Length: 577
Image (cartoon, rainbow, N blue to C red):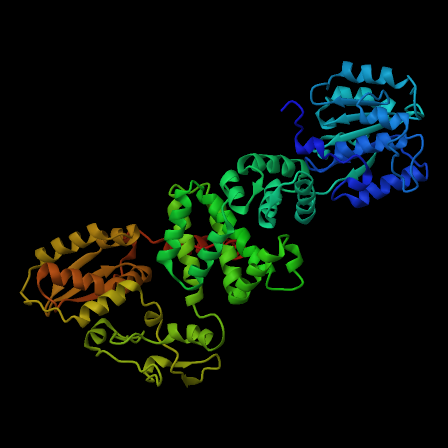
């Protein structure tokens, strides 16, 4: 137990050849040593655990080696190399700038720079986390860093290059270390496992490498943790259990259910994931990454961006052949929108469930070929058994209009479809239907359904007081605040033949009444037990007495006063609520 050394220390590279994932940088450093073209200051920057400090130590050992090998590596046999390997070398001085960041610490360092090495050619000063130095400490270090003694070499290491002042950067050769690829991490973990006689599964190592996020030190630490948990048998399942990682198998099942449009099973899978303790945002971000991976597996040129084992990659490729590009594009867009809105949402679970429902509906929306034509034609077909009204018809003509049934395959040509074109020529286009038919709302469809049920009333007589009472009752249940205000401020009058005259003040109000006409008539018929009621809207001539206006009326009034307001709205693509 006392002799146990964690893998991150035990298998720390001791020469340039054993450094993982930084071949271009190590080659550059070896060539500089072989050609004897050493700079006096280096800056190693990059993410954590990618080999910055390790390369600095190997570089310090190699330049002091008394008999370097032909390939530029240290011999590990001379007195200088042995002293370095035993951690007793006086030629290497390491300073942790995170805890020694004051001016006095830097002055103490610059005083030691004057002392030449006893063995070897150079004294190497490695300053780790150099971005933690104060501005005063940086300034105190400038002169020594710019003109050090010929035997002094400074190596600065940092994870946050942007925090270093420009005057320091300009005095150093900068080496940017990359994140280590997943394949390189997996290969090195296999080497460590074989050295320790540990049985591993390739998929387990892939999961560890993905969790490490490009850091070899993190990968080795996680590997030690899994080995302790599994007793030397590292399996994919043991990695999932120990790291609490969401298995990609869930995403495979979820995607297949969404492709089939099975909302129920999709929600059940999501509920199962939540029961395992995973956060909803983790599910959303994981789903977005999964869809992205499936998308890049559709093309042989982009599949190289997917860094996983061949077995896993083949499963993704099989799923990619099933999914259409349109489905993946839209699903990726919806997932990203959900991820952005997750933090501000109050009902987070509902937000994710809506995402799953919307993705389930994607494959059932016609997107290509003949189905795409159906989407374009379908809104233009008038619903069956709906009164088609001519735009120029008066209220009395509307009352006498008879229902028209439109044949979908051979649309009937009506007067409303004979409209002049830009040259003033009348053209009979069966697909030109009145605006009211195109704006058929769900409420009108519900009214049509009620009409089909042929509900009958006693057609009892009623007084104007009864009408006003029912009129106010409808205003109370109206959801639209603007229209509710219009109803309360409109004057109504009962005339012969159960005609209800509604006095309004502008065309905007008239359009609202036309949209709600059937719903209001239905409500009044139930309240007054009479289905012979006719609503007739009349725009009153005395508009000055009218106070409430719609947003469109207010805007038109403002544009009349200042026409530039319309340019502002058009320029910024604004719209009125």
